[in-house]
Image 1 (cartoon, helix red, strand yellow):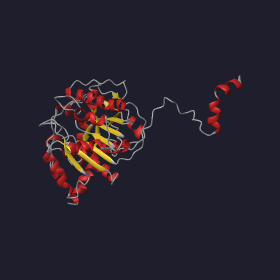
Image 2 (cartoon, rainbow, N blue to C red):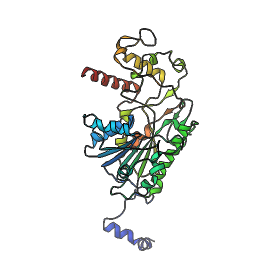
Image 3 (cartoon, rainbow, N blue to C red):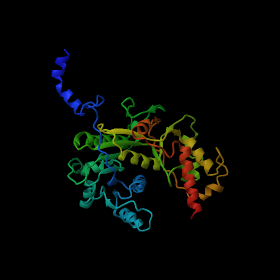
Image 4 (cartoon, one colour):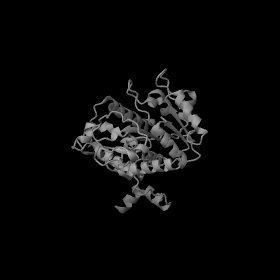
Length: 368
């Protein structure tokens, strides 16, 4: 019997003798690892609040990287490029207008060439309201699916929203199928469609493009969030939701931690996985009331009272908070992103995040 096995499997003996035997842990059905390519050419769809912070983080991590991106108007393009000479926003090599309003033509030829040459793409632009499509894929999908540029497209990061989960009555949700997508609003439904479209790029392109969809919580950071709100918006009587004692959890993420997640993901060799989804949130979903109370404490307001709203609060120039848009009551788990990309948070909870921003504000004003 042994001699018969040797005869039928003599090729294994040859491979073993030559030192070429494949390890038993490697299966022909194992996921194919994506090539590790450091970002050399990055295109960011939407150089707004979040996209701009991501660009600056990439520039800090990869000084020689070519970084380009899109904005919605010629005026915004001129504004960003004019800041380059003042030493504030040296992150961008070029900026292109993504026309979604006038002619709905997307990027011009130069912008399309920049997109076609990117090794890494980050898309922050929301789906177009009247078409319910991702604008880059709707206008330039063929360019991405049939790329013939000199650089291989290695990775795409799409910024979606935790709003796609809808209402789970305060329960924890994860990215797997056990957590149903219950959203009913048009904006979140369009996000689900955009996620699916981007994930198809990994499945159908055959080019080894790794695609990650990041479901972001409510984004806060410098100039945005309760620490920078007007005193009126921090009154506990300013919003009926703040008086409700039933916990309504809100998932949040510091903009710096979004940038950190992009850096962790874009240079990874995670295997291709038919498009992967990650919750991009901090560790502690918390009711808005708790966050307001923490912001009040940092700003020197009387805890839990609307009286004496003066003094230290006057040193902050707040902006009025827009009306609250409910995205459902849920708590999103971020463990997958930590496990698969080794993601580390600057602000694991809103307390660290607000303290981090308060210190930045203090240092900024003290050095002015």
